[in-house]
Image (cartoon, rainbow, N blue to C red; front, side, top):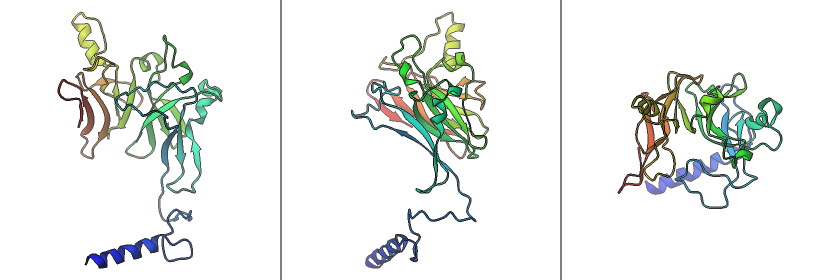
Length: 259
């Protein structure tokens, strides 16, 4: 039985790797799309690979390389020969206040349940990374596939700069859950108690804690939903509507990532 399975698997691999003119599928052969099949675009991020080893514990990696940049791309369909377009190229135009040398950092792509929108975290321009007064912050941005519109979800500059926003994910009702240092409800509680509205730091006291927030699709109605010193990131919405996320537990004796 084992020998028979190996022979069948080898035959299947041979058939699948035959190019045009054979009986196989012709993997990555650039064949024309099937007109009876509905295909969808794919989105991805391009950026340089760091020369130094990454420190995965840092959520806001300091960009020291003056040449570093990240770009957002769309490929019309999931085929190597399909045309691709850089969505983020418009950020380097006058319409977005940029120029040919404007650089951004991009991460955390998420797709809406209906497949018509893509959300991601972006910060920049990176030329301002050393600005002590107004360094660039992470914001949640969205690209609408049907209208070809790229925009920041939170339209108000004041509200957008209240914290670092990363790891967006779409909820079934159209809202967005994301991780942020803004800690809205925590600060409101401190204000009610007559205390200063400071950001809670993580257990190591090295940076402000990222906790989960929810906002409407238009960036309004921001509400904090997790409260702790450990950072909560990378939310994923399950099919039953519940939210799965990663908590970096740095309490004494732990120092681990929990689901």
